[in-house]
Image (cartoon, rainbow, N blue to C red):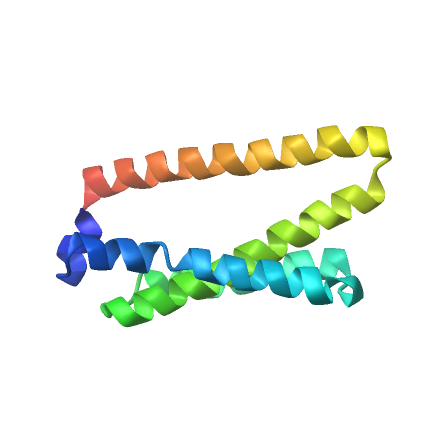
Length: 129
């Protein structure tokens, strides 16, 4: 709701902009699947995460819903690339028996951090505006 007010758009428009990251995730997932064999996993992961900081920081500065949506797409590209390369890295560096636990722990950590991050950002926005 606070983003709808900030940008002065409908809930549907804001929902589309917020979820634009899904488009970036889909594109990056396909790209990594097709071209990922030649990417050094460790370097690809940290470079994706460093680049992710750029659109994430810029999101706090924009007043344009179009720029907001484009930055969300950029976030999706970076997040999916880092996620996919990390899954590949774990699968390549653990035994078959250990890979299951490593991947489960990684996915659980991602889900938990996403959940708590959303709760925390909602609490901060509610408290400080």
